[in-house]
View (cartoon, rainbow, N blue to C red):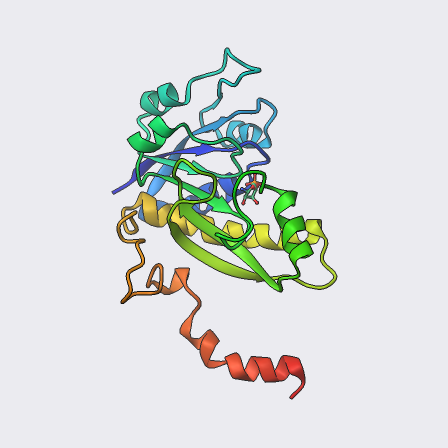
Length: 234
Ligand code: GRF
């Protein structure tokens, strides 16, 4: 199975580019093709990247830009199977969420359900993480529902927070991990290997996705005591 993918982005589009490059590396094995990039901001770097990569792109209608394209029309016109949000700041209308149930995903630069929800985007997330004093943040890929950052979690990966971090250094460390995790999640969903149903957590299976790529590898925990001793100087 190979899905037709639309990427929605409001910003620079580095995740979009990471997805395209990952698909290029996978070649014929890839689960999908990015056939459309759409943004609510006509100056979004993501649109420039789409132009450079020769991928069709469009600007979405907003209150301040009523002549833009309608999301639903674009998804129909390009026969989209999967909608990938990558730094897209707007809520997806509930009718579109219902029509694309299990076929809209997002990446969030923290470990949900912490540091998510309305207003938690970009540097706001990383500032809140630092202010809270947590030592670990991370990335979360999740299905999208009608609320910001609430849908079922597909994959998470931890990222350390260092005492010397500011929002900028932390954002950069997290973004590098997003570029590794998100393309693989997009490929798994696009290729039909992971679905909304398979991402469900049951009491007998506390791991979101049993494949090692999406979980902490077993050897990490085997070396946990050793690593803690080393870092505490025991
Ligand atoms: C990423 O940190 C993503 O998690 C968040 O917005 C940022 C987008 O970066 N939702 P980019 O536009 O992909 O470079």
